[in-house]
Length: 292
Image 1 (cartoon, helix red, strand yellow):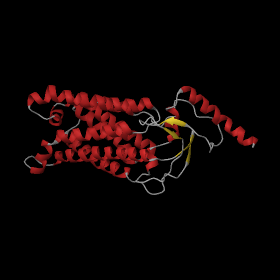
Image 2 (cartoon, helix red, strand yellow; image 1 turned 90 degrees about the horizontal axis):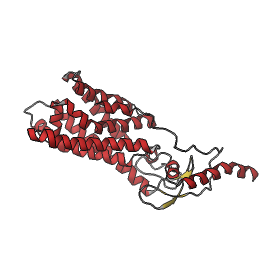
Image 3 (cartoon, one colour; image 1 turned 120 degrees about the vertical axis):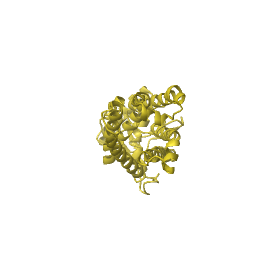
């Protein structure tokens, strides 16, 4: 699954326009701009988390690159949905992959293998939700990950309809029996690799960093036929353990961590003329403060 290795990109990049050159962030700056999909206008504020990882102090204000910002109710909902999508992907993968460690004839193992396609579909849906809500400063990278996910979903449906179903096999079993099918299903896992790479890079999470290598190595080993079943099971077990830790630890993070610098996203949502006007105001602010 060569596409998964293409995701080793630096996701923590600067905004497309350079940040303003000012010594301190102005505290009284008002920026009215649409945010997210609501189309409404909000004041650019800054955010903090003092009430714990699953709640946010909406009165806390922090300085962002383009002005102060704070967490609102919509931000909290998006972050919880983002994390819920990751938990869904991890939980379904854990259950589906556990079937590989159960012997044939085992009732639990047989039930898991028969439900593998449903588990795969639920996990892909959870991953898609997280990729829809993920906060990445460089929009083209976010769109690229979403495109990979979409390509994997289309490839999965096509592989099942054209190849697996005529043989009366499930999609997951077909991919296990025919490694070349990973060329069509693999982009979904490439998108997952990109997501965990972003998490590892942004938050320094060891489990996410290791997953960035485990996922493509295992899939490429299966695709190429160069990896024996024992090595595959070993890497699969590592994947299961690290993915579980990764998903669980997401709920230990403050809400603001998954938002990032909200001022950057609001700035990028502005029309070009308003961006230029805002940058001029920010650059002039230190001069005004000095004159006072």
